[in-house]
Amino acid sequence: MKNLLLMSLISFSLLNGCSNSRHQQLAELGFERAYLDGYQDGCYSRSVAGNTYLDGFRRDPERMATVLKYRNGWQDGFEHCYADNQVDYL
Image (cartoon, rainbow, N blue to C red; front, side, top):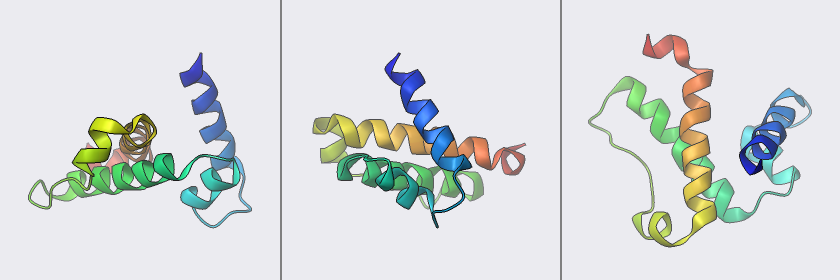
């Protein structure tokens, strides 16, 4: 149920064209800083993974282990940016 709500909020924010970036859209929806940081790092990591494995992932290991919202944001960003750039991966 939480995942469905989260995905609905993310989908709504993407359809809302008034904001400049996903980060700003999610912030306007009230997502916390830890989630936003994780989302941004996960999204960047996915975009780099599509180009080369040598650059590695951007993630904070300490926050991944201890801050649930950062970890969830990272995973959501990693998955969502793959869906946006799927053509690059095929």
